[in-house]
Amino acid sequence: MREDDLFDEVVRYCDGGWIGLVGESELVVEYENGDPHGSLFQSFFNSHDALTLAVHLGASSIVVDF
Image (cartoon, rainbow, N blue to C red; front, side, top):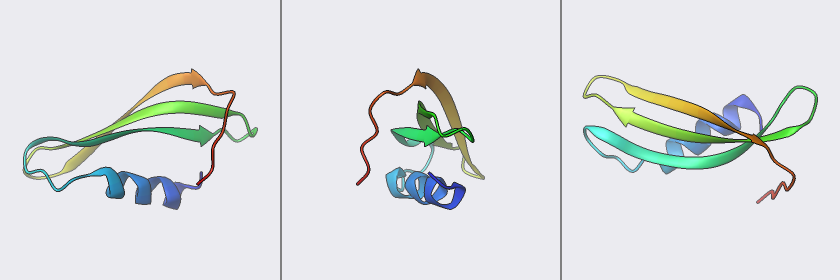
C-alpha cells in the first residue's frame, strides 16, 4: 500500500465525528522488503487536529486486494 493510498483509506474510514474516536480500520501494509504486516489504525479528533495511531499487529500471511 502506497503512502497516498494509506492516507486515502484513513480519510475514508473517518466518519465525520466531532470529538473523540472518529474511525478505525485494520489494514495490511507492505514493508520495504515486500512482507505484508497488519496494523490497526485509529483516528481521533481533539477539536483542532485529527491524530492517527497505528499499532503493529504482526506479519500477515494472507493479503486480500480489493
